[in-house]
Length: 426
Image (cartoon, rainbow, N blue to C red):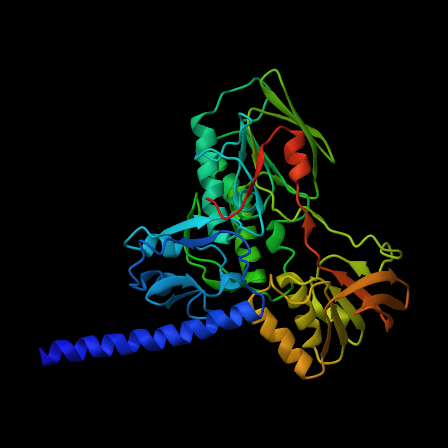
């Protein structure tokens, strides 16, 4: 009995230490107001959870960030803002205590209504990737391939029409293009920007977290942590080496169905297709501030290369990851004056590593943070800001607005696609 008692004692001591550590982490999360997950995340049924910790160990973010923990012997989402929807926790749970859901009771998330084969309520229109709620590169690549395979199974040949028109050349659109080529379908892919979609818009040198995945024609891809440039180089080689039919700088403007065929008008021409795959992102059109002077040339809506702001006075607007990454990247150059303006009182939507970067830059005097502030007017050499009930003027050479995008919900509804708001549901 003594060895058994010793084992139980050690186990209980370890459980107590884990409980104390994870409780403190969760308390810090609540105090910082970081309780809202960005997208897909686990919902834990405490009545089924036995506290084995398999979900905690399975989380791919665990080596770097606290996401799941054990409190009172039950799994708890202790770092909601660090969760990016891998879903590995659900697979690892041996007691089926985890469901993957979108949105929360306080913050809803708009998601198109889709069938298991990625088809929307409009027959022939499929959705894959970020627009459907799956923002991870691996998930988007997998969904793009699966959606195209579903289209191939239900393909109906129409005279003079493509088998499928793919909208978007991000991860989902790229995988779908490869699958269409492999399956011998007639298709065309159009992209309003450049190869990679949202990935192309990442700042230069940004680390991209992905995971091994199987792609049509290409085979097994072993990328894990790589740079934006390396990933885009690989994708470019995949496109050029396999003759993918992708047209860039071409934006979809309208779509209607007539005589069993979709007529899609883009900024350059019109297409006829038996099916359409929407592989576009959720960012849509950049959200503007709507203030005087926003049309000045110095105002942009994404950061590509921090070094272009060497020696300049820059204001970054926004409170999400893209805003914090942009502000930190420019501030870390060392010879710039950077101000981060956000209307909220905390960076609730940003990941911990990005919050740490701006805190460190602020501590070094490289970055000024203005919470509870709003841009009122942009002038050639300065910006007027309303901050804590005061009007202040900031000398300025450049403005980067990272306030998210106007989601394409209106467009989806215009073509008949149902969109539902998820409040913590699957």
